[in-house]
Amino acid sequence: MSGRQRAILGYAVASGLAVGLGVLVAAVWLGPQDAAAVRTAAVAAYVIQVVGFAALVSARGARFFVAWGGGTLLRLGAVLAAAVWLARTQARPPAPLMLGLAGFLFVLLLLEPIFFRMGLRSE
Image (cartoon, rainbow, N blue to C red):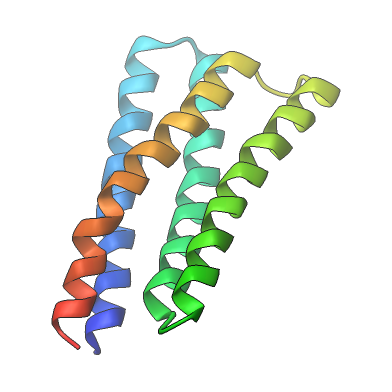
């Protein structure tokens, strides 16, 4: 397994643990509908972050900045898409979902440098 693959796998595991902890805390402190909204946000943030991180770690040279910008646009687009979806459908309580999505994206974004450096060091 290459260093980049280890970095992606490590990031996916650590992100899963962070998201799982957030979902457990939400389940304890929030009502069932709000906790379901936080779970939805957690799944969305996890998928977005792991895909974005994998693209970033796999990029080299000038493609690095394309992957970095693409990941930023992906996150922004996800937040905007969630806001539009919630405004049209009211499928979930908007406040916990939007706050959960922004919070999970932020926390998972803070984990990226740790695993990004790990992938670079081993190559």
